Length: 140
Image 1 (cartoon, rainbow, N blue to C red):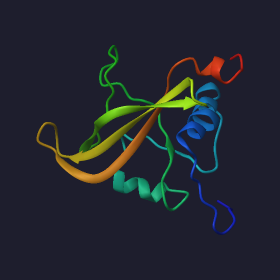
Image 2: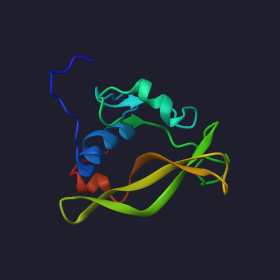
Image 3: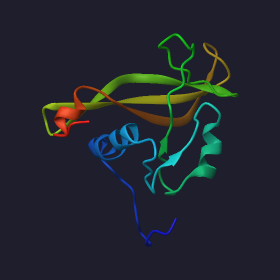
Image 4: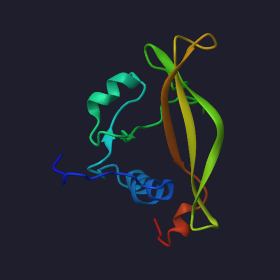
């Protein structure tokens, strides 16, 4: 990727939701030069480094995988471990009043639950929430 020396990609949570995630959800062909596509259930966290574009923090679009085809539970397992949600989801607002998304923190554990071993790998998962369309002032 041709970016000028010193370029850093440090979007706020609000910018991630509004300028990237909404556009990706509404247009599957949308691509952002700083965000790669990856299947996080088929990649171990240490393998994701090979796909990185920015060097400091890695950013990926990934479709949510369901544990069961008819259920709502999310599958976050890989071959060698699993991503476990930790803490409380953070609400993301446009301005101060309009809820547009949520941010979940996940920690990678090797092995299988409930006896997995915690690692230092951390990931933040963003999802759309609320009436983001009306908040953005657009009709989709």
